[in-house]
Length: 235
Image (tube, rainbow, N blue to C red):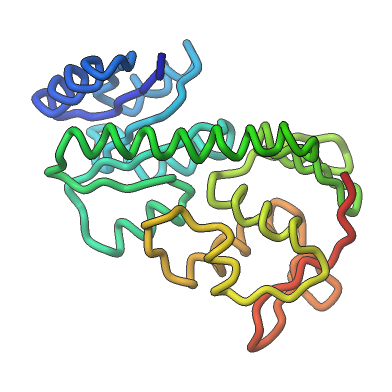
């Protein structure tokens, strides 16, 4: 049974979504506030988080970033702010999908299944291929757990966007990839995110990898061309 955490402060919407998803065989835990969300996450594991943008005690974008920094769980943003800027920022924070209000409940069900298919499909592919861990320059990248492990054996959690981009880079080491190629390799289908998101995600990855971004860095900027992952990768 799919375990959903629904973070929504509007009572009518929360009750409607809970009832609808339960009708499709999903278990839904409602959380009207950011505090309730954090309590629920401490109490159990969820397959997907449905997260409203505006909450009485917190902002959904901040919560999305904080949660994805420590938990490998898909996040679908639910918000009345359906403008392109809010949508792009949410996806750049690492959200897996974005659905503006008002929305058709059946579409939400379809998006939940699509997000979980992508997540489980990637996991199954790694398990079949046996290359779930990539190693480079003292770092280990565990794709199943979506974790970086530093040379000092410290675990570094990755957001969904960071995970997808690092996967694309380690799959193409020592090769220049344009921003367009990195978008094709790392973006969630149907999101239409601009190539500026690649630059922002690269910046966050460099920070986590302690990479200066200079000429001898791990993720090198190739002016006018794109990015180069300058490391030999081993399983």
